[in-house]
Amino acid sequence: MTDAAVRRVRLHEWREVRDLRIRAVSDPVASIAFLTTREQELARDDVHWQSRTADAALGQNAAQFVAIAGERWVGSATVLIRDAGAADALGRGVAAPRAELVGVFVDAGHRGRGVLDELVAAASAWAEAVGADGLTLDVHIDNARAQAAYRRLGFIATGLALDTEVGREIQMHRPSQ
Image (cartoon, rainbow, N blue to C red):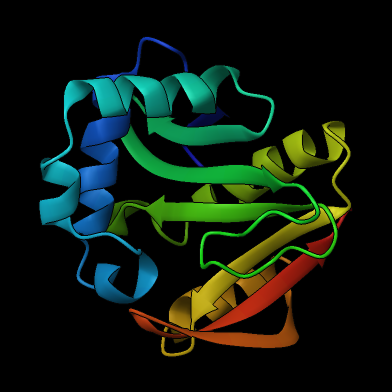
């Protein structure tokens, strides 16, 4: 079991959301795990972070969950609800409504301690509560560590893949539990 508490972000926590995102995109494998760079995130103004946090805290089509150990934010996962006919984060058309798991990050010092499991459980519960039939995610073909972690949590490759600006991404899905 993890030593971190997992919950949805709160409206006033935009600075913490910003700081955690900057740490996430600064991770050594961030170039294959995120679609933005540290420099891009650092260039965003406070209004961006306030708006992003408001959507993640209060929105009906997005929710961000964080893991907090003591006072330190050590992990994050966001769920985005995509309606049929919309485009996903990689520009693909969405044929049927789905919940996408994005922005997944666990601090190196907290990996292997159940933080990811708790983040995915919280994200999955929220997605199911808003009517999703599971979680879908994209993971870089070279990110073997992430693929193994997702398989352990019940995600399976769908057979869909896409070449993106960061390389080839494969799609994985986990049905509602």
